[in-house]
Image (cartoon, rainbow, N blue to C red):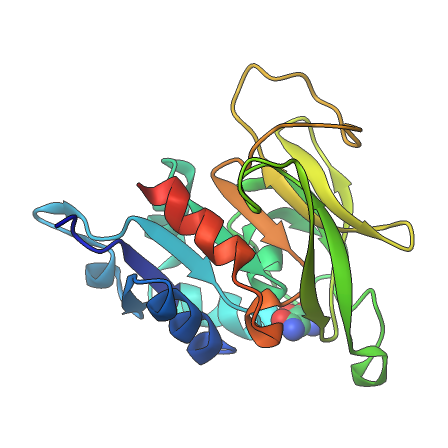
Length: 223
Ligand code: GLN
């Protein structure tokens, strides 16, 4: 029998449990990542995929640096590890944050700039349906709908040539994916059949609404 996929969930702060449960339900072996030895060792990398959960990005950033995790995680993710970031996790991945908390930094591995709390305060939080443009999240079809919660959600203010948009709601970009080198840059890609790249960042939470599409796609990428 094939070994279960080893899926890490960064477990410093935030919505760790929902991601861990969803990944376990999909058959992954979940590793809660709190120190460098959780993802790398003398025998090489210990993860096949990684999730960065939602929470509070400035707190997560502080803890990442306090525990000397920022540089090794940056190396791991930019080395091609399939990675999914939701909400605060998207902010951690981004190239830059337009409105950082004082001193807040990011891993800078994902070619997008983000704006925190762009969708308003707690009262603007809701559950919504998103049309995703990416083959692989929903089998081979390029488009599909996923449900996700928006909780003090960021938006993606702009994507650079290394990423493309996969989710838009009310004119705001709420999801993007990095894509393999060599493909033309195109931020709308009507009718695209392009799959997810190794890093996907979404401003919403499919793990809260129980929609497993993104987690399934992440594990499929890890095979
Ligand atoms: N507003 C939070 C931040 O800036 C993100 C909210 C979330 O992860 N649900 O980090």
